[in-house]
Image (cartoon, rainbow, N blue to C red):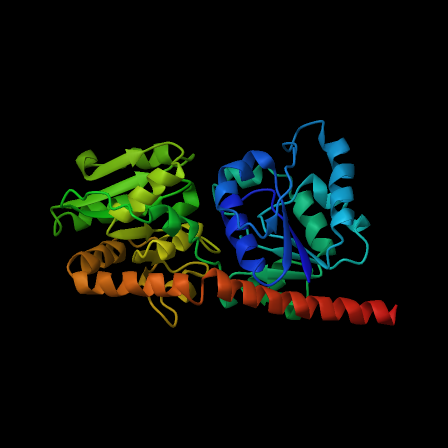
Amino acid sequence: MKVVLLAESMPDYAVEFAGAVSQYCETSLFAPERSLAPYRATLAPSVDAPVLDWPRLRSPRNGPFLGQFLNLIRAAKPDLLHVVSQSLTWPSLVLPLRGRVPLIETVHDVVPHPGDVETRRIPPQFARILRSQADALIVHAQALKPLAARCFPVPGERIHVLPHLALNRYARLAAGRLPPKDGRFEVLFFGRIYLYKGLDYLIMAAERAQRRIPNLKVTVAGSGADLARCRGIVKTPELFEIRERFIPDEEAVELFQRADAIVLPYVEASQSGVIAMALALGKPVIASDVGDFREMVTGNTPFGLVVPPRDPDALAAAILKLQSNPDLRTRFGEAARGLAEGPLGAEATGRAALKIYRTLADVSQRKGRAA
């Protein structure tokens, strides 16, 4: 089977997923070179990824690019197209001209996140156009299927579940590195900082937990529109290390390795690439009970704790529980790595994707014969 993956954004996920699928399918990855270039060194050699001068959203070059994009798809002669990024803007307009090639989309965020100004800059018409022609959708958890069925014009039987695979490229980057620790119990909040991330609840929880954990340290690494508001509620600035900027991969790996736990105090979510990084680097997680977090973190192989959202007392208690129980942290860390190397690794994910692809291809062939 020949598959073309389309990824306008989320290059770290796209590269990892392409490598997984390429173990079972002839795989091409079409993505903007400006986002793909930093990841090419870790792209599986079996993945064909042409260099694409893919224009930005508001560039006047989108018109000419659409013809090139359609020609690339036709030349590849795929059995299936799979959109693996959160959005596909202008190219979605020409996908109706692709012929009878089945189209599947991975919906990473079923509903827009509160305060996510980046995603809201993308006109919603593009998402509607894409999903109106999708033959099937993928979400990352069983808990998200009913929501997706309510939100999108796709029958429930054509909504498939494929868990977010571990981003093991970070484990490969971490090989042989062991950053020094300063003796403090360190929790890490990582990534974009918008309202839905709930950083304010972590700040309140940490300041309460510090009464029982004098050596507590909270590292906040990333940037976003909600950080300024959150800074305003900090009462003990010495408790926090804030790195307000884009965090390159090598620094991200160091921060995850140094942390004793990764904390996601989100008030809303579908899934999280931060959890996928924590899995790869064998780190215990504390997460709010939103989106697929409970299913992911405390499923058949627990690797962390789940607390109610918007509950700083429960979050403080979870931090204290991990701090006071190093054996539990070790078990959670080992469980995380086991998942990353097994059920949520490349081999298992590629195999599961192939099963979905074959189901979709069989349906498409039956429709073709009926026509």
